[in-house]
Length: 341
Image 1 (cartoon, one colour):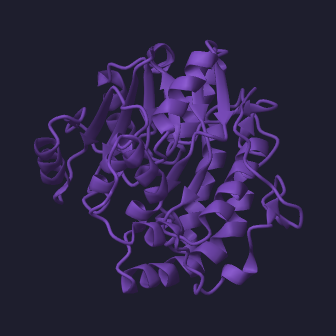
Image 2: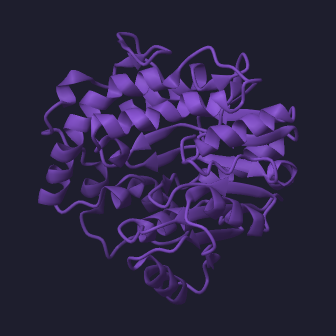
């Protein structure tokens, strides 16, 4: 059986790192290892992870330190280089993996021996309408997050590489000292440049934070320019669709809704990172023999859906999305099949 490592680069992630680790280890299949790679954090990230490891000695969580250079790319590379699994998952420190993520990832690479990289859709756990957001993200990534006439681009918050593929490209990936590129797209293009296959699965699901939208338009625009900069660094590759156009359309709504919804969550004392996969985790606990008898009212809590949030009436569960991200009237659903290009 293929062993799946999960690599989590971390810099000042004290707010969400425990939730991230909980989700990474509450899986239908336990990962081979979960590597938190600290990069000179100045908050309590290191102490929190060390305490987590001490309190959960049965879990395969390890803490590594990348202190030579500040930055995501050297920290990511350090983690990927030190992982010992056959498949190297890479997520952010504020990502919440769906409880079957490891199982799905292992299945993708087991069923397709030619697959060298894989990715899937995401939803925002700190925004309303999770299912709708997931459908929209799935539609966009299936149709526009591509290069070279349809080849799959990997998304850094939800991606996995075969270890053998990483060994082929680890000395080639751009170090991006100027910090102007998308490191995940860079990895994707290096894989494609080697003729290696990347695949997409609608079942490889991750929850991410919408905090990127909680920034000024100037900062957001600079972040969007990374798409153009990355492809400019790889002139032999091209794309037919510009995914940033969809993100520009989403920005006003998400930027306006994020602080409102955050205030709602705070007023209700709800941790959205804990809540997003709580239903699935409860089912998993019961399957493993825990009746959850010490949690009275859990059924109501799991099934409750906030309905008093401004903006929800703008879209509903019948909303579908076209490839450019615009709402349509027909229903849309996420398929469970793996789509490869």
